[in-house]
Image (cartoon, rainbow, N blue to C red; front, top):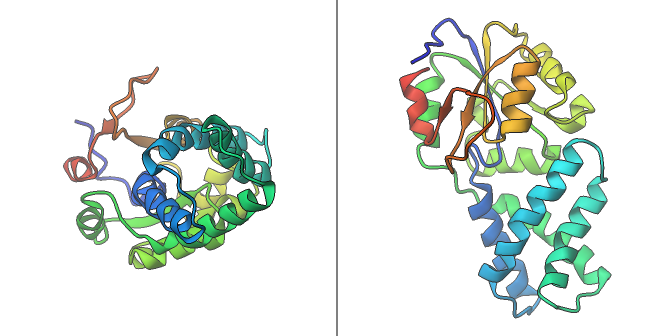
Length: 230
């Protein structure tokens, strides 16, 4: 097993890596559907929403769609697939309410706090996220993990999104860290792992669902496995 004891800086992705996005997202949708009196089966909704959201995020990462289109179409597609007549005004309202409620739920991945407690004395910890500044800050604060991190880089500050090299360069500069002494840890093979490697930073793939990837990369399926290598 590779050893990283010479490393000084660890950069974590936030959503789907430390912060349990799918679980918190489900609670947020459940809340707003009830508030709006929408009789929508949450399981059916999420089974379509999750892959559509991932599809649009991939397009958004490479600037093929705008933030507004991401927020609109990821909902519009689901209502169309479920054959529900939902006005654009209601979609906009649901979209705004979702962003408002999402950070109010703060489930973390199993082992996240234990891992951060273990790593904090050994390394300087940082976040690199493609999420939006205000939402991501609230997630970190509400889940009580913001104090573990020295710096937080988001795509708004950097002007680009992972996997673009410039966001990694921006984060290194903010952290006052060199490539050689840094590691990136995240759940997205394209954005976090390949993005970091192409920026000259070693990476660990948090592969929760054990998906098969093209290149052999260092990976873990559970956060606490990181204690074995860091």
